Length: 177
Ligand code: HQG
Image (cartoon, rainbow, N blue to C red; front, side, top):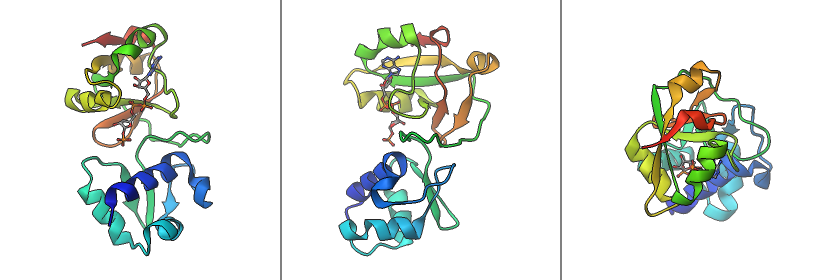
């Protein structure tokens, strides 16, 4: 089983294009696992729920939640119907790894969701560095004063144990590390 390709397609479907396979996705991003496996069969052959479990165990990141034969992506969504996430009190500080070329714009207009539904923030510096490396070989780590932003009304949401989600973070809460 090519778990890398399978994972990419599952992320593509659950985060960006559930309509590609006519999948019903609810307000919290849940999809019936059986429906998903049927949809993927033409490309990946017969799949069982255990294949998804194995995929999740092999992954270096916690990307999906599997419960009661339903599955959803923890984060990353881009389709227009915004997924309802659970609001939560953030830690005092969160981090965001980004490219050098984006920094001046971020410090002027704030951290924006860009093509996704939410801004993605990291629980720790190492995670932020890995996220930033996707955009730049020498990423910049931004420190987010999450506590102040939260107190001033910016909403934060749970992603997985390392990823937090938020609405736009205005520049006054962001500094270069
Ligand atoms: C930047 C991966 C200019 C932002 C990762 C980022 C993450 C601005 C880029 C998850 C800006 C968007 C998400 C502004 C933000 N001006 N640039 N005002 N505001 N940006 O990929 O956070 O492996 O959509 O800094 O690990 O990099 O797929 O977001 O560089 O958790 O599971 O716009 O995706 O997870 O890039 O990554 P992205 P991200 P997976």
